[in-house]
Length: 463
Image (cartoon, one colour):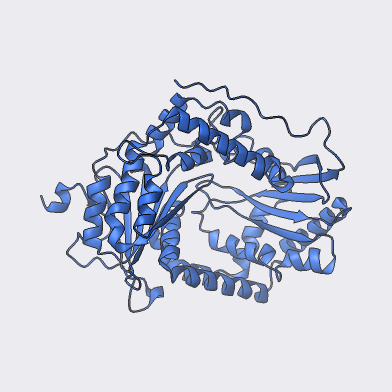
């Protein structure tokens, strides 16, 4: 048994430390991309990318839990733990994480989506051991203090009221999403439903953390001025001491096929009518992903995009048109969102959208439009890949959401290979009018009986 087997490291697609572990990709030129991947004995996946241009490191810890893993009564917990993970352990009390990171020249952040929760650290390479120790400690030993939980509960509830309840666009999007998905948990808002936020119990929190914050449910990305052998030893030193836990329950629900348009009319106080569309699309790992991303750029990517030119600049039916497609583990929806001028005619706008979609599905896109989208995609890719933070983000996206970090290194070729026929095929698969949900927000002058409810009193009690 060699030293790596004794430490429980399983090497993926390469050789152990001390040997040639460079995994080069032709798209990166002769210098190659030095990427090293290993799985610890407890199931933690670690991927390291050496980049010695500056003496810094970017760390991304991708925890495989988001709102799709929640259910009735526990919605919003993934986002809540994004807050709680900064609130201390027995070894590092509340405030220590930020204080120690800043004292060593580092900074941090975190975000939550429907699929994942991601913790980000940026620091000088000399602080690598400290960053790994802090991250491993809070994954394994987070303290759930009732007083802290209640404070954060208030923070999250206020955040929901500010970002969702007090925003016409966010409220409409939340309701369109909930109507577009009848069965799949993508119908759950990331921030959670108000009554659930106020009723989580301590037993709920303990169960959630022990289920999802396990090394075998994490993908750790390190990019920057690191030695791969030493880096993996440190990862094993701090993360390897925590045992694996039973795999979290899989999300088995698949959304039934939608066979007819669904519509939502929402009267709200405001000035501008809003219209939002949600078309059932594809998952991140779908091979049609490059074609749909290019189509997204063609339709809503900037001032020169097709819908902006037609609906904002030429017909002047809207003051802004945007949209996007959240790439997830399961098939999500492609959103198109528009803000109309005060007094704008939503029926006229919808008729114009239908005309644009009919033209897209009949004629496809032009060679010029496709080339513009490819140019933008290539520029965005290379701008991202030239920084250690961009490398860490993209490496994690491909490892977690696309199923294999090596797909990152062939992404430019995959995008360049997309044809007009590929784009037309994915357009016809996604932009089917019988598989869309349409939400219309009509302004009214003042709140009526269906205005925002008063805050509820918390019902949860420490268990």
